[in-house]
Amino acid sequence: MKKLNSILLFCILTILFGCAKDNPTPNPNNGGNSDNGGNSSETTNIPPTCSITSPQEGDSFTENAQVIVNVVAEDSDGSISVVYLYIDNVGYQELTSFPYNFTIAGGYFTEGSYTLKAVAKDNCGAKAEASVTITISGPGGGTNGVYQVGDYYNRNGIEGVVYRISNGGTHGMIVSLDEGYGSWGPAYVTTGATDQYDGLSNTLIVFQNFNLNDYPIFKWCYNKNSGGATEWYIPSITELDDIFREKDSINTALLNNGGIVLDFLYGSYWSSTEISEKYAYCHRNSSQWKENGYKVRAIHSF
Image 1: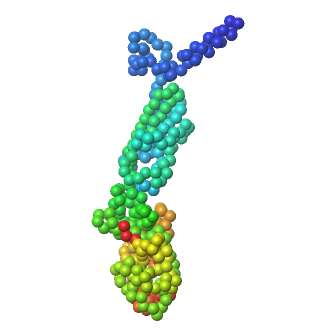
Image 2: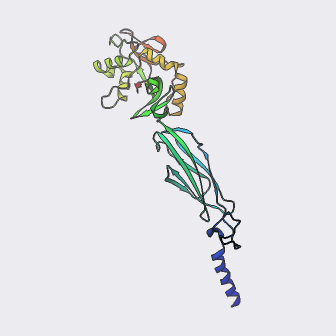
Image 3: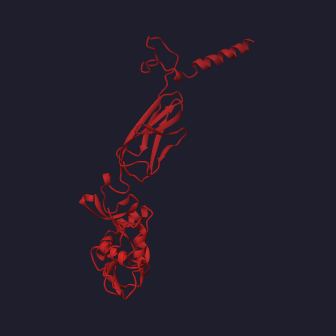
């Protein structure tokens, strides 16, 4: 009976005093002593440590980018029970097991600055935290809608790669991620779409005055527009040459955003510029029979 009583007493004492971390001394900086100077047998809980290893302070991402937040949390005299992630002090997610890597899907953020805060809590309730501030820019370009050549653009359903900018990058032109293929149109028909600089003018002439079933590349471009809109158009020969000059930076963005790489070496691209009833311009002022099949891209202003 005495043995049973001893076991019960031991259990009670263990419950009351077994984890001094649950009852830290009033002043943890006094070496474990209480405020009245008396000695205490309890051990002060050591708080955990917490740091964000990535992203780093000031890192920048686009709206479409996935952001992965890597947190290192450790507890020298116990264990980590949970790590929380807050975005601008609003709880986003919690993880209870290592590794503490949080994934924020592309499209979660809009343009602006955000503070990411990680809070680690140990098995006795002590906490530690770390934070970084990141910047989110537009879907493919510079902060606050300022773009550079080679930026990915995706706004209001219009998606492409910037190949020309104006007004300091707030306006410009994009080329489509996809491309079509087909003939320019029938030979021995003059359309009047002869402008060497204004592809929109050429494209509208064909859209508005001819049966698009006879003009396959124009029909492809027309189908890119919804609700009768005419914003997408086939570049003039001059605009097509502008795209060629920026092909390297354009192709990098195309590869990174699921587009079809521009291939000027092993194929020609039609322009919207007609030469005569029989011929139209392809890339680099190449005169081609209208009924030949070549590739085509569409362009759009922003």
